[in-house]
Length: 332
Image (cartoon, one colour):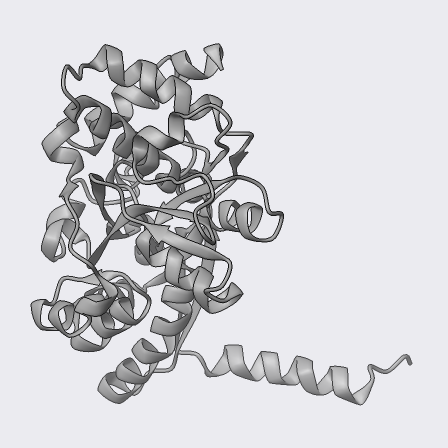
């Protein structure tokens, strides 16, 4: 009889033992650039939960463009929780009956444990002298961003640029539409997600400016060093939220509601908020926000509710089939 090599046998036994030792397993379906956030958070929660309950919990992660992720959950990916970067992605699951209709009231701060903002990453020395949204429409400037129809990162970029155009003297939906047309024409491609956009800009060396979350700028610095890029804060940018929710259908089937509830609640704990700040996300905890103020310079922001009447209304106007994005993209 054919035998496995001892090293392979040991590995298989280890994996089997690990699975057997877990009292519960949770899958977190999340957006593209949240890998490090939850990679760092998970062991903190596991330690807390073990001390509190005696249970050993196995935590798994799934990452991709936010809209693709929620569609995967709707199609059968058995995620116990979703941690997204756009409220309308969670609403999509609520409409499918997978998430509670009142999901935003299940946790504090509209179920968003931290915030961020959209900023520009430019080459060292800022050779194109990019200072504000208007510069992204300049002829010959290449803009790297994820696809606005499939990613929260891309949508936040689009909506930030639209809001800036509205706020200019004489600004209107018509002038904003024309401005976005110029910006999108400067995009040589649309990345599949935020991390793919970063790879395109930093490793493939495409583009003059990458638009991404403030938090991603520091992740880039950790991975690639600070010598190759600079961060530019525009005059107005979107305060981005990161809503979380329990996938009711999955936790009820698996019997993991208690663990899933605790997993998300702990994001608001001191440990969870510290982890957010150390991953360059603006914590809700006022003391920690003050403690890490050197990470988070003051900036002028707007919310999607203030300018667009909410994430759902913004999505319906701009990103549904036939919306303003499609109108612009056909012309592009």
